[in-house]
Length: 112
Image (cartoon, rainbow, N blue to C red):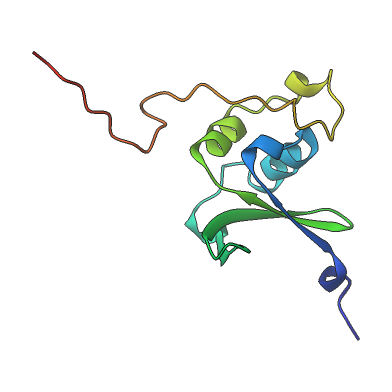
């Protein structure tokens, strides 16, 4: 007897393709954000290592690539921001403004 979850369509989602529906599912599943325990690591078709968090609908398992943009967008999520968009519109989720504190990169400044 096979599990219904085994027959789900699997979709890898980059931040650029994130829809309001998937974002809402992520915020619902990870209300305090995700951490290392929630991250799934795998190799894609190009043999590149990908880190993602998983959310599931009735028919699809989404693996959403983790990034600073995703983390900041989830932290600042407000469903009212998306009420004028279709739930499957990837144009609705805009790149957040990333502060120096949010960024994982060190900034070198030349001081004369």
